[in-house]
Image 1 (cartoon, rainbow, N blue to C red):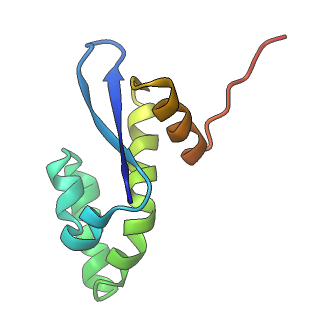
Image 2 (cartoon, rainbow, N blue to C red):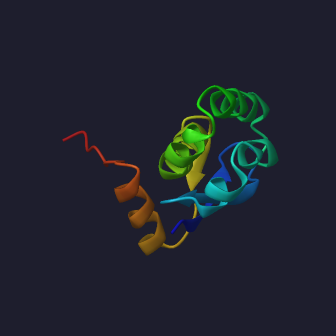
Length: 102
């Protein structure tokens, strides 16, 4: 089950919800999920994948969509902005490691 994680845009300060883990929302609504989250190109691409794979893509993508979404958000100026426990859980799920310059 997906866990909700608050994320914040570093420049504008806008906050929104991100998710880590299995996406039941994607399982039931498929390509509409990225469309509703504002990822029009990704939604269109997933619709094409669903058409060509006879919706097999939807069964695969529900396991990977939240990870891909969060990776796109974090590489485009968003940062984790939740409790330490939730941030650490998200970092573990997304394989984010802290590097020190010592």
